[in-house]
Image (cartoon, rainbow, N blue to C red; front, side, top):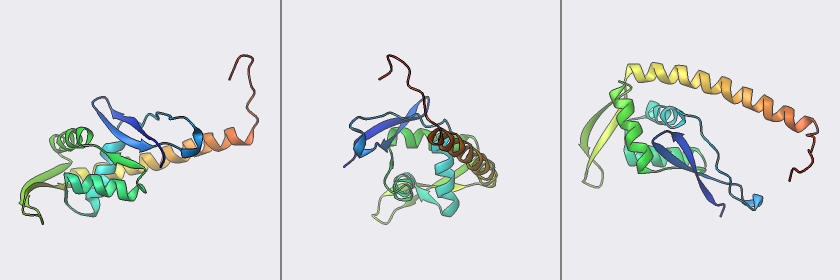
Length: 145
C-alpha cells in the first residue's frame, strides 16, 4: 500500500493524500488553500450529509487518494457555515445517534459555481505546465542530485 502523507489545505487544517508507491520516498504535496472547501461544497451539492458522510464521500470520489481527517473537516464546516455557504440541523442518524446534517445554501451553490470554474482553469494551466516540462529535456546542473 502506498505511504500516506499529510497535505496542507489551509493554515489550520490537514488532509491526508496517498504518495506514489514506486517513488521510494514520501513527498509532501501542498494542496492549495480552499481545496477542502470546494470539495465539501461539491459533495453537498449532490445531497445533504453529516460530517462523517462528507469525509467518506470525498475519500470515495478521490479513489481513496484523499482522506479527510476530523481536525480538518470540522473547522472547514464551521468556516463554511459562518460564511453562509452551508446551513445545518441536528437529526437522528440511521444508527440512532444525533448527527449534524449540512446542506448547501444558495450562497454556497453560487460560490461552488465560481470555485469550480476557477479549479477547472487552474487544473488546465497546471497540466499545460507539467506537460510542457515533459516535452523538453530538463538540464542537469552540476552538483544537482
